[in-house]
Amino acid sequence: MELFFEGKLSAPIVAACARCAEDFKTPSARPFRFVLAPRAAADGADGRLRSEDLEFSLYDGDEIDLAPLVTEQLILALPSRALCREDCRGLCPQCGVNLNQNQCGCVEQANDPRLAVLRTLKLQRS
Ligand SMILES: [Zn+2]
Ligand SMILES: [Zn+2]
Image (tube, rainbow, N blue to C red):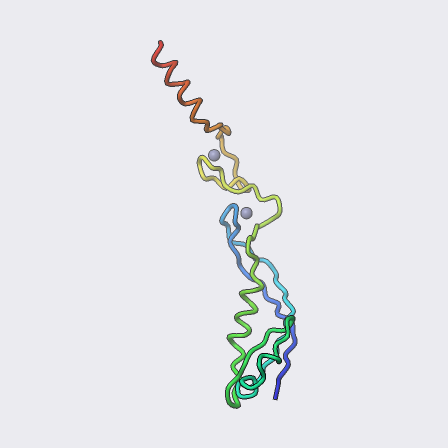
């Protein structure tokens, strides 16, 4: 017997911002559909039961453990590159201050190694 599950997973998840590393909550909602087929039936079916748009799993015996399937859906629902907000300013590359919360006195420096060489040359001349 094949079993069809259809539903929607919605849970607030806590993710770490890719720019400023702050934790933030984001709502996630992910519709899912999956089919469970008994392993015995699938063995003789040459994979014909598989369908591209459905998650497909097998079960043994009379008991079905949905936990791993739900966990998998949860993992899929996680954003791969999460930002706490679209215009997150991230961390100062020089002092590490969270620029969303604080301003630091750092001036953006061009870390050009050629400039460093020039500085050294000037020092030597004087
Ligand atoms: Zn952020
Ligand atoms: Zn700074």
